[in-house]
Image (tube, rainbow, N blue to C red; front, side, top):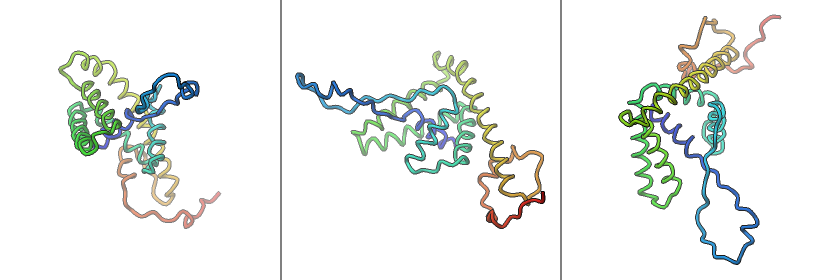
Length: 201
């Protein structure tokens, strides 16, 4: 769980977009140009909803599972990671180890090197013995936790409503929120929607 969340964090901070070179620069021939990989910039987010939306779109672009269930589970994993610095440090260490192994096989990959730098930055933020990290943990982390928690509650409520809509035959429980992870991960077969009859008007 914590490993998946660290991977989620890593993907968010390592999203790359290549800026377009101005046409005036392309047409200039009076000076020598050294051809290099274009500089990249990371997206800037103003709230956690934008982070989730961007993450979901990137999953879709790469043909990975991007359903609402995937997003809510990832959000919950992230929430649990943020609540335990030790787990976060361990997860980041495992991600770093995997990236280093991948980089050794493809040493010229700039994306892997960029991702490794981001992991190093995240590890520095979680280093409790460092003065700057202590400030980050004290001032920034609580705000991030609140945003993630609020988003998680909103998503869990949506999962509850979707579950009620799909299955009218089951008795409605007073609250499904504590059990929402089991609802999502349940392997029980669902009856086709067309077999249900509409409730009497």
